[in-house]
Amino acid sequence: MAQQEEVLVVERKVFEGVGTFQGLQFDVDKYIQRLFVAGVPRFMLRSEAEKDPSYKQLIPYVIMSHNGKYLNYVRGSRAGEKRLVDKRSIGIGGHINPIDWTLFSVDAHKIYREAVKREVAEEVSVDTAYTDKIVALLNDESNEVGSVHLGIVHFWTLAEPKVSKKEQMITQMTFMTPTELQQVKDTMETWSQLCLSGLDEMAKRKKSA
Image 1 (tube, one colour):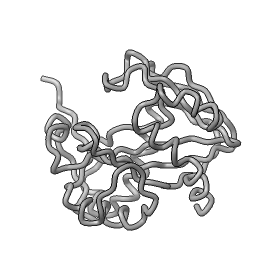
Image 2: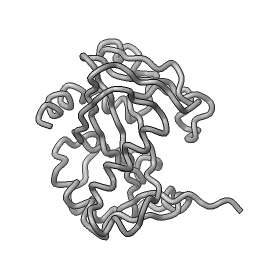
Image 3: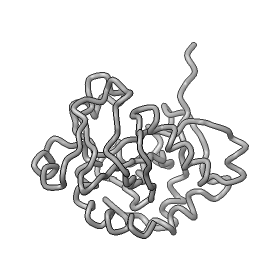
């Protein structure tokens, strides 16, 4: 019998205790400080988390930028999340799976950041130096899928545009300007559409890294 996938979650009441919002939230520090308190993040079966709105699955969403252009791609038919097939995305990332339970009692935020690097490395190869700044949180309560997820938007500023795909589900990968992305906005997944509207603010906030 195949082992069931476990994913990183926090209780919705923790998130709501800081303050609910729809779309992007740029005041990230107050959320990060609460979400990664020892004992708050935990793992649960994905099959249960997808159906239980009393929990929020924490999803890193990494936006990569170089010289004013943004990495984007189209999710092919091999994408694990069938609801996103054929959708364009400007975010790399996905569910965080168990690494080491005991480390979460030491520094959950630090371990999360390392997990993000591993998650990205599973999908693409980044062969250049970069800076990493959490610039926003993303919440979409407009549908059942969004209601059980909370996006943590990372802004990676790349020294060079050296990114190559690893996952077969990634197709048509390229760097585009915000203007070019606006022209294909209708083909994007919902989270990418929301992030596209906030790129200017994200770019400002990454400078304070």
